[in-house]
Amino acid sequence: MAARTAAPGPPHEHDHLIRRVAESETFQGAPTMRALLLYLWEHQGEPISEYAIATEALGRSPDFDPKLDSTVRVHIARLRAKLKEFHEHAGEAFPLRLSLPVGRHELLWTYQPPPKAPSSWLSGIPRKFLWAVAVSEAALIVACAALLVHNRSLRTSAAAPAAMPRLWQSFLMPGKPTTIVVPSPTYFFWPSRQVYIRDLEISEFANWPESPFLKETASRWGTPELSQIYVGAMEMTAGLRLLQYLEKDGGQEVRMTESRKFAAESFAAQNTIFLGMPRTAAYLKKMLEKTNFSIERVSPDLIRNRDPKPGEAAEFREVAYSTDRRLAPAIIVMLPPRPEHTRMLLLLGRNLTSITSMLLSLEGLKAIDELWAKTGSPDAWEMVIQAEVYRDTVLKATPVACRPIPASFWN
Image (cartoon, rainbow, N blue to C red; front, side, top):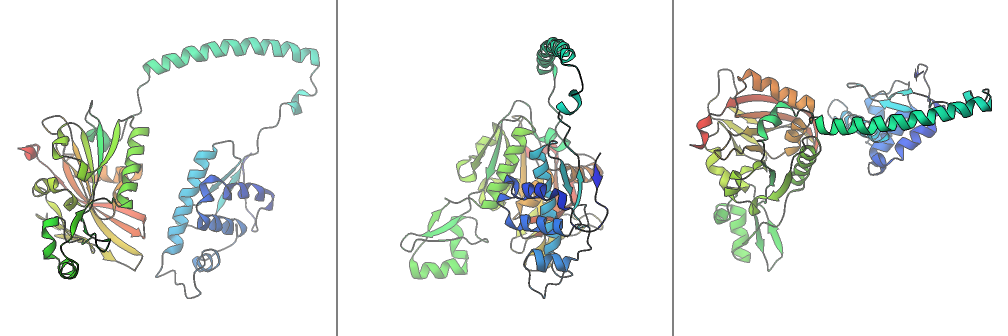
């Protein structure tokens, strides 16, 4: 029977199991998470403050203030995800189950003893009876194996794949492959100096004289050359997460490419997911002139609402709570089916982690579904989301505004 700790003090009898968790592959590349796990285990059952966790487990300075710094809450959320990942890999055979309830930082555990070995209850049974049982069981195993093979063949031929969430069902046009396009940002390159510069306000190479910094640099080093040999780490990570999700859970044929290698004509041949800032792909400019929400500025981010509804904000701005924590807006655009029966999904913003975290989780998809339904469940739509982000970790993402897109969009 599973037992839960009740008295204070570390449960030393299971220390060898917690060491197995801490030394597992899941925690090998996360020393901070490993230290936090062991700290909470050692103080399990004791009242622990955020200040104590920050200064004793995370190495923060004595002037740490949990009212101004959400470090502890962020790391607790990361540890919760790590524990979930560990148990998914370890499976039901691992006897110690660890959890961190949402809103708390107390490590809870349950222990399910492994089943006893058969020898413990077979030892009192006569040997000749065991031989008879063994022969009977052998015949039964052969029969069961035959039934299992037959049953598996039936399930293989008759089973249907699990239904994808509504958003993905709407996007994935049948019989078409899917391509994920990650942006190739515009860099300005001075070969003589081996210097690359990226100006977030300049998206087209020909417009570089409009940047005071680039213009001043060119006066000293000469005219820059165009370079698009880099892809952002965040964009690549988001693209890989989407690719793995659609291949594993959706059974889709998916590939990934860069925007500089992807021609606008390719939209007709496949379903397309575009990631990142729209200015990195010139072919999106005309499309986004027709949408209601537009990215007007980056760093700090600003999304404009061209036609606000009553009581709706005309702008969605980035809000900096501290140097590490901010509220960041982004846009999801589900364009109508093209005449060639393909679709485009645009994930636009500087922080793509917030968008992918919503599109790849049941909780996030449910939140999108609710606002989508309130808008009348149009076949095509655009939506603004706002995400509370700590460094590169999304604490919370919320859809805040949605608009339908007419089927005549491609006319």
